Structure formats: C-alpha cells, structure tokens
Image (tube, rainbow, N blue to C red; front, side, top):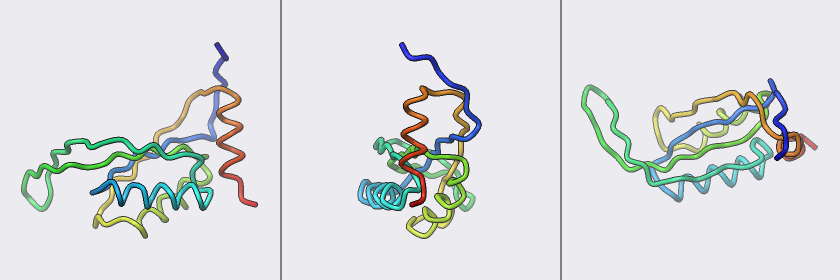
Length: 113
C-alpha cells in the first residue's frame, strides 16, 4: 500500500443540488474550468432541514469536489452562479493526507494553463 503524504494545499468541497441534472451541470463546469480535478455525484440523499421557519424534507444530490485550497474560492463563486438554491450548501473540508500520486494528479488537473 502506498504511504500517505501530509498536505496543507488540498481540500474537498461538499455540495448539494436539487437534481441530478443540476449536479451534472455543475460538475461538468467545475472540471472543464479546472476548478476541480474530479467531482463525485452521489444520491439521491434525503435531507431534512429548517427553511423559513418550517422543517422541510427533500431529495438532494450530493457532490464532492477534489481541488486545491487555492482554487476553492473560485470554485465556490462558480457554483453560486450555476446553482438554483438561494443559499447553496458549499462546505470545504481539509485533506490531511493522501497518496502522492493522487495529490499530484489533483495539482495537474487544477493548474491554470
């Protein structure tokens, strides 16, 4: 098994969308524009949340984007332009360690030409 390298420069961004189509549109844009090396689309997920004073329940699609910390703000801004929600869920998680090959791939795929 490959050993894991520590990193301070890589993050994963967790997001949710209202539909599979919206998730695919956002994922395609993020990868095409090199804001993310990869976006996983998972779902459907059942979400229970409070909105405008009421408890709601909805089916959502989960996205997880792999990127560099330096691309995270641009990624979030781009998601906001494409998203149907008034307040989309965009949460950044720090990657503490990953294989060197994976980190190198993320770097290469999110590099601006």
